[in-house]
Length: 180
Image: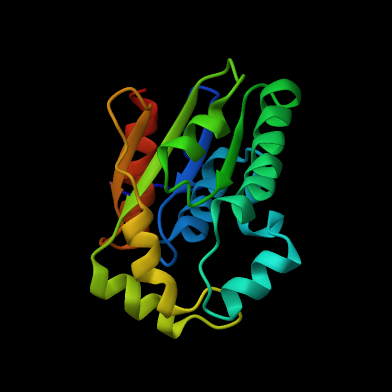
């Protein structure tokens, strides 16, 4: 089944956090979904402070105290979407730990789902090494993978296999979202 941007994709209004480690395809998927949903979209990396960007560029992992101000900005954006955009919005954010995900959902009463992207390690490493103009070096991938806490059944989410061609991934994601 092939989709076109003219197809009438019916997804119930909700907030989506496209999540996963660096190189998993968060931005790629979010931009692909935007062609069909036309919901507010925000690249979570744009909320990082210059301090955080510099630190990661130097190959130093962020601490929780580095991340909390960034997560506060991500949460504020999601909350604004819940209140001002009919509960529609797509945010890219690593959201690696349960405490981060709980914070992102805090106080939001609209439907909210994490879209967890799954990619084999060798593909992640290859993608990060080929990327140009991104502050996240491949040397931090293992740190991110060690930090990742798998989503639990009480965290509303879908899982997406990002090893397929992008059109297939977008179609599969839209189909799963329609079933929510």
